[in-house]
Image 1 (cartoon, rainbow, N blue to C red):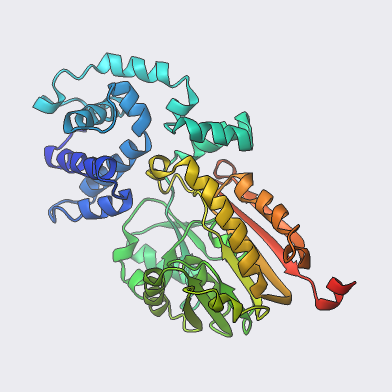
Image 2: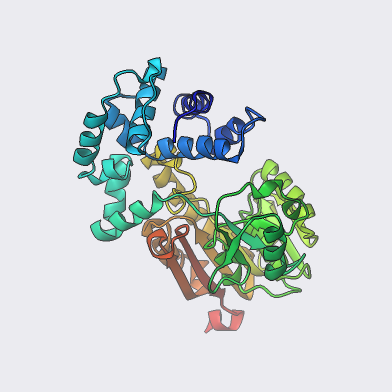
Length: 410
């Protein structure tokens, strides 16, 4: 087990782009992996995992290394040295790693790990918010779970085949998967692999989607032939799942504020063989008004803090700001009030987020049900999913039903 200079240099360059130039970790990693065609799978694995590890533990490693932002290259090397020592790598005699104080690093790690915000490597404000909303005990186990790397989960595209057939197809490519209990379309990869390069992906046999994210479309209770609206479709992971549950029958309207995201969804839908989707950009309020009381089912996959998906997006810990969460709560309330009007009497609405904070979840639903439009809805059920309990992403979903006109009058 030794360190290779070209892999480490790529890692340092990538960390510089993420920490100092504000780039997103997933984009930087994707670029880094294309750097040298001669790299084997173990080389690429080292680069990707090391970048993500140092991003995930940035605060802890910076404290141990006694460096402060903005990090210059020497600082980044010192943080890398901390990572290498804690991972048990022998330190090579390179100029940048000269004088690495191995014993001191281990001692500092033991000492700093007694403070949760440092041990779990999160900003103080995030730690305080987590405690305030979830309590000490739940937050401690939740944030520890959010620091575990995410597993790769596939969702079978049932428009093109069965889970069993997909599993066999991947087995032929030496990609081993396991079934997930109570998840009709999910397969979990036993080991990480670049599944996007497979013909099975290019043919639209599956999408990569977290196990708990796969529960949302099922919660909406769609049936073939319905009119369904996904109001915050984005690039469309849940939209495509809904299309497959509708068996391509009926009308599925995918809406978003951003045309670029819907363009991405169009490409994915073509690959998936999902052809009952219409695309609408929300560029004026008229787009929503035209649909008032027209849909059997409406999904509001609301913008949120993303505090349920930190294991998947560790750099979000450093990009998020407390003001953003305050603002996003206002947006959630507005979106719920505006988009819920699309549900027709007798129809159903699902409000979902990938956050674990009650203020973005059940408290938003409670507030909504007291509004003028909210009083026309009955709360049916909700589901709060913590990463610490499920092993996958943290999610929230609430199902509500719009009362029939007669029921409202009574």
